Amino acid sequence: MKNHSIFLFGCSLCMLGYISGAGIRIGNELKNKKLLWMRCYSKNDVLGPNIIPIGGHFIDNFRTNIWGTTRFMCTLRQGPNYRHYQNFTAFKQFSYKDYGGLWDWRAREDGIYLKKRPGLHVRNPVNMHKVYDWIY
Image 1: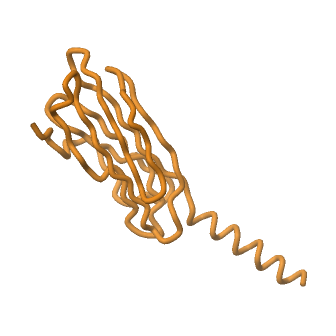
Image 2: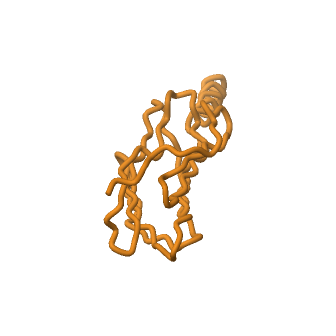
Image 3: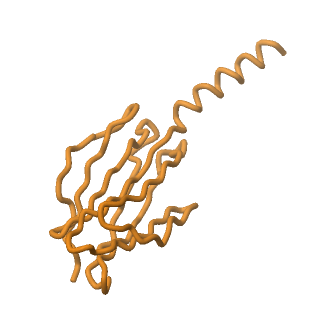
């Protein structure tokens, strides 16, 4: 029985390595005091809607799943009339070995930018670059 307990404890520690933290950050770098409306969702969670003031940000940390299929979709809209928007994948786990890291999104006048900040075993960290244009 003692060996069985040790085996289960060892398996539990291994599982914790696969179920690791990740997160998304959405920052408002728009000009002219424009507010940023955001709403994100995954299979199990809904974040928002929230209004992010100029210079502010929203951050959510979460755990990725063991199957490597964690994904968050987001919609951003520029104030004051919220006509300019974009729907996009804000976080995507690529495999069970990918722990995610922090996906740092910035809303700017000319589009939406991304920087993937590395964490433990993060696949494909990237520097800040423009990913999406606003839809008018």
